[in-house]
Amino acid sequence: MKLDRRTQFFVFLVGVFVTSLVMGDILGGKLTEVTLLGRTQIVSVGMIPFPVTFLLTDLLNEFYGKKAARFVTLVGFFMALFTYVLILLSASLPWASLAREPGWTGMTEGAFQSVFLSSQRILLASMVAYLLGQFLDIGVFHLLKRLTHNRLLWLRATGSTLISQLIDTFVIQLLAWSGTLTGAKLLELVATGYTIKVFAAIGLTPLIYAGHVLVQRVLGFAPVLLDEHGDPLPEEQPLERENSAS
Image (cartoon, rainbow, N blue to C red; front, side, top):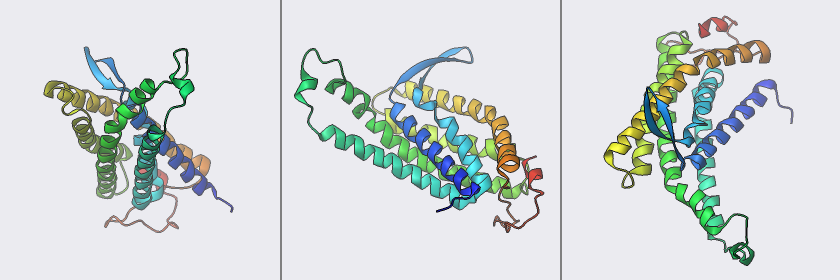
């Protein structure tokens, strides 16, 4: 099987996307404190990989279209679900007697449960929020792309992220921490998480433009253009597509 450059890049994007998504879910149980706008805020370290998914979603939307982006979203969801099943299966197996001995320095049953089983609620919450946020992101991205006639890349990239991640952040924090944290702490987590995502979305804008340049000039293929009805134009369209990134 011979893979052309476009297919190879698609596989690479999917691999990085799924890795970032699953690692964000696994790491999500750890809370840390950051100083943001002069205040110390509580935030989940699962936030670290998620800006990568923003960038990759925009690249998938731009160069492969809405159907491809939705397909990758579903692949990511089922891989997260697969991860959840594997963790449950691993937890159901009995521990070796060696690992229960007092001098054992490897992973213990308590450590395993704290690291993996305590994150199950967060993992489920993340999957629900992820589906809602991703499909909203894809829809808003393509709506803005159509309304701006394939121009203003920064607007559709940043705008779709800001809208979708507001819903994503609220849903995941509500499902993950409701009943565990007070209402004030929940709102603090939502506000902090969303603020970080806003800064991440704005900060990633130069990288999105850099990604466009890399894909178009180095890899040699152009973004998908939309007509006035939101349908993809034929791939034979002339390469004035570099102007669509401005």
